[in-house]
Amino acid sequence: MLVKICGISDAAGLRAAAEAGADMVGLVFFPPSPRAVTPAQAGAVSATVPAAGLGGPRRVGLFVDASDELIAAVLAAVPLDVLQLHGEETPERCAEVRQKFGRPVMKALGIASAADFAAVDRYAPVVDHFLLDAKAPPGAPLPGGNAAPFDWTLTAGRAIPRPWLLAGGLTPGNVAQAIAASGAPGVDVSSGVEVSRGVKDASRIAAFVAAAKPA
Image (cartoon, rainbow, N blue to C red):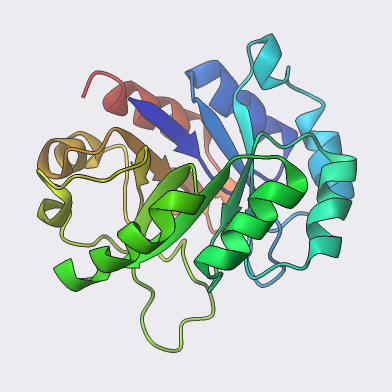
């Protein structure tokens, strides 16, 4: 069971995720998000915990329809292990980013109904991971991180041709139920482990990981 703690914005949050045993941490490079960090901030925070190859969690950079210049600037400041594309990136753009920057790509897809899984087949040949999140409501300022779940049974028994994480409305109290209902091999949480919007809570992170791993 892979566990990703997304929206890490300070050293305390990163340490809490690493100490709890999270496999991945997400750093948000999308200014409208309350969890956004600059490349310099991300580099300073990341340096406080060992890299993935030295026992720390994998660093995932979250981008929303980002330019090559932004991705390059981030990679110059912080050694990301995975590039998460959470906007309207096409399969062609995902392939381009993957080839240009030599990093695995995780594509986030919004799910509201069974029809939304058609996108999985279009993206599968050019990405390495999927993040299946609740589809943002019309007019929402953020493409994810809205603390809303989708119907977890939509993924139960469904063949997803790449490793994937379940996201959307997960908390320490419901993550085990979500895993059982969805069959997810991994989970992603952000607001569900916060004490206030954008501020991670170490005890909630520990409780989330402890609930998810045995499931």
